[in-house]
Image (cartoon, rainbow, N blue to C red; front, side, top):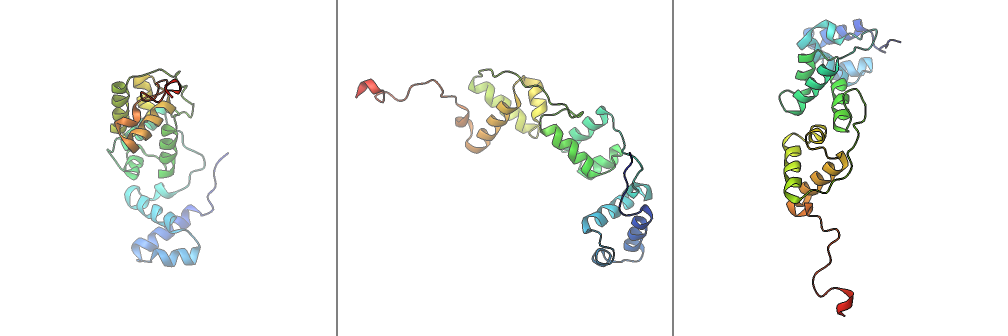
Length: 189
């Protein structure tokens, strides 16, 4: 089943041309037509960068290969391009589509939407934890890549990163199972 926009393609083009050729303000157009400022700004930017076809609503949803989705997400997350530039480079229909992929990628899903299975908890020494956390942070909090590289669960890495960012290395020290300071034991009363 296809999609249908509330606003015709012809009207979108007409409004963008009004802004560009007649210098009509966005404010006047939003009042007159009841269209949001963000929609008009997006249409205008797409029209300038990519032409008339870019603001036309298609009859059906586009399909993007897993490789294209992954390249686009990584290009943005690695800071190589802005959201809009990535959409232009990979001919992605809108920034919201790319944002959806990025959200899924960060939420421990692959780009097909499948949940990546977690590994069983493994006890890891402080040095290894620090290197894992620093790797994750250096890679723009890319938890999926960190999971693949180190084989550690998402929850574990996420927890370490949050602790590290809040309190530094000392927060990563695991004190479970260790007795308190000398003299604090019950039998020393």
